[in-house]
Amino acid sequence: MPADGPAEKDPGMRPRSFLFVPGDRPERFDKAAASGADAMILDLEDSVLPAQKPRARTHVAAWLGRRPPLPCFVRVNPLSSADIADDLAAVLPGCPNGLVLPKAEGAASIAALIARCGPGPAPPILPIATETATAVFELGTYRSVAEHLAGLTWGAEDLPAATGATSSREPNGAFTPPYEMIRALALFAAHAADVAAIETVFPGIYDMGALAAYVARARRDGFTGMMAIHPNQVATINAGFSPTANEIAFAREVVDAFATNPTAGALSLAGRMVDRPHLVQAKRILANLPPTPAPSS
Image 1 (cartoon, helix red, strand yellow):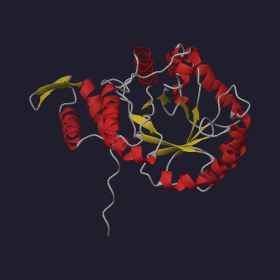
Image 2 (spheres, rainbow, N blue to C red; image 1 turned 90 degrees about the horizontal axis):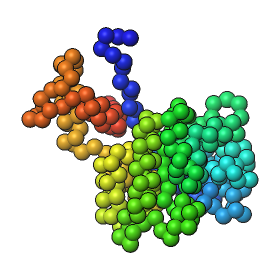
Image 3 (tube, rainbow, N blue to C red; image 1 turned 60 degrees about the vertical axis):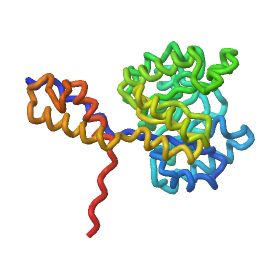
Image 4 (spheres, helix red, strand yellow; image 1 turned 30 degrees about the vertical axis):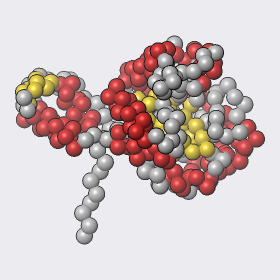
């Protein structure tokens, strides 16, 4: 091992917004792709009625075959459903960028989905990790399968139905205490696995002020992106999960300061003390900046 210790993991660029699109609504695919979302989630599960699932698979497979202009994930049906085999048979030939697994219950579910994908490498998996009571107790196992994950997200709608709760939210839209706890556990599970922590959806599609506050809270708490249910939400989500000009400038100062003083554990910078955790955060901010366009000739 080098004298200065192990290299820090490259945080890489992570999507800010994942836009859901029902798989049986192909007329919405182009609009979703042009929405500015960093990734699409083509849905074969909850937003598609059972009778429409074969049609949805056909449309999703055709869209994947067109080489879409942005990363495309597919939300398949749960492992326990009769639809999962048909979902995978339809979409895997199109090489989706990832599979979203609903009602995931820890590492065992990831291993089971990989096995269902057959020979060859399976696409990265984004589990919705809190939709059953059992799932909550399996959150700590995802770090054992982290190399197969595209991130980790959570949900606040299926679990209340599974447990008999009347709601996961207060009248003002805030999560009730049990779901605040589950949100936090999902956040920490993602970071324990060192994968993207994706905030769950916001139900209001026209209240941009409330959405902006929700996104700001998610970023403050350590989420790196969020799922969207309508194109109207994408710009607010992208803005909220993008660093400000001041944050970018300070991150560059931190990186430059440690590059100039590589043996320092802590430094004084702009009147404040910074140390190695600040350097990790600064590198993460800079890694998520969009590429600078090449100058026109």
